Length: 98
Image (cartoon, rainbow, N blue to C red; front, side):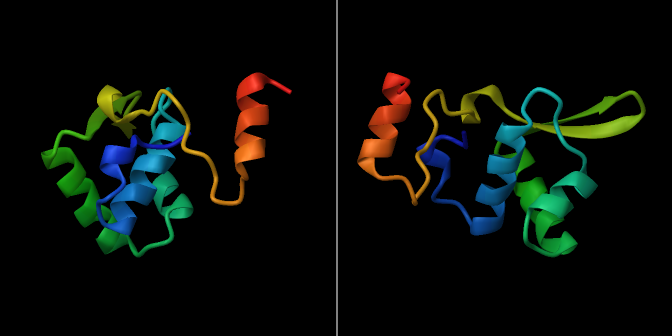
């Protein structure tokens, strides 16, 4: 699953962050966890997080003494975006549960 298609025209680091956060939407992620997943330097990640927060696409909360970042509910796609490696037959098979 990933971010909705309308949020995929943003800079690559922002899309990578949104996709990672959507994958961990329930528990959220720390900046260090994002750094381990997103292939970018920490300064780019921090800048992207600021932009995403300003645009209302992420929430930042303190949970058990740790800052957790989560995607806003409206960012999460209800239908996952198919992988580029999947053929239309694979997508159809997944949707039919075969």
